[in-house]
Length: 220
Image (cartoon, rainbow, N blue to C red; front, side):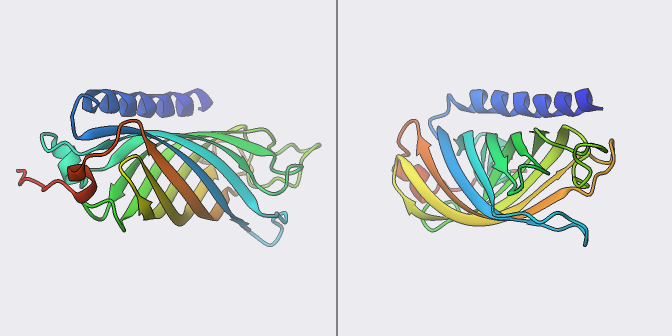
């Protein structure tokens, strides 16, 4: 099952990169790097759940902002961004939960064609490696994670508070879930609510048309 999870994640990652490469030749596509810091709290799954301190995540995303009117999926999703995030997570209790290293392909869907004052939703599904998980003798208190490899689901909302042709700064918040799908018990899962600060750096400056929004053609 672990190999299957890794295969699915790798396949999703490969498809994302192929989309990015195929769209990279478009004058209305721009590659970017996006560092992000998230702070929050793990929600207890039950009354016996171990107490945790502030959760900290350091993430780095590599993506492509696609504004291609010739591609139906680009128009349908209101000119999204696609890519992959790699991240390090400290759950606030190293002894019980340890740390997690995640690889999560994502899509960011915007609520507006303009980049200024814009909300966008970031959705991702990938996998994580946990340095510490349940062990009947050495770590019996970790009832949340029963295996080294888990699914990881991310759902966040961001608001662009500052935008230039080469960078943007956003704040937001969201929800992250870790679980192995009951392939190895115990598996109460880790659910976290977090606050985010992120900044995009475009490898080539955005044009005025990209900043202000390209009109969406009618697609059948």
